[in-house]
Image (tube, rainbow, N blue to C red; front, side):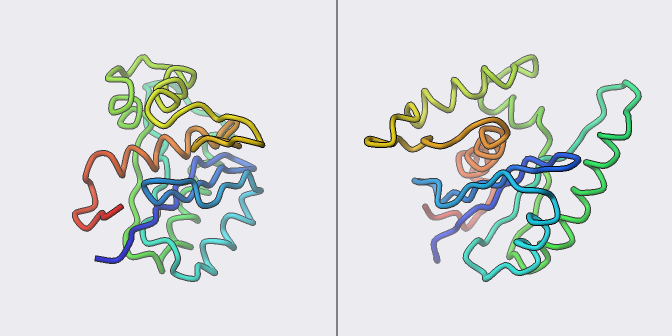
Length: 158
């Protein structure tokens, strides 16, 4: 089959992180305002086949305006990505459970597991697979690699 490329989004209330992953390399990464992510998705050229969005889930506590705004953007991103062959939402708990085998894992634990699997970021002169990932880009990368590693897409062919 054709090579699958995953676009993974860690959504936020104002800005979101986007990573495109082909199973071997980060092809594109961006920390953009939500409107720019929305436009990128709506104007997709078909280069990416799968759209993954981290889904907010209930922890049993009340949520504030920032979480509600993030949920609003998740829906907008999902709708804007209608041109993708596949669209899925995945909870953070699922991603942490896959990478760290623990729901209590922190973002720093997930980052370390990703470095252990894919190598240190490296330097500008000698960049590693994870070079240039920072802040929420790590969460988007964790989502993309989770999908690629778990054989979710039956047609995944890195």
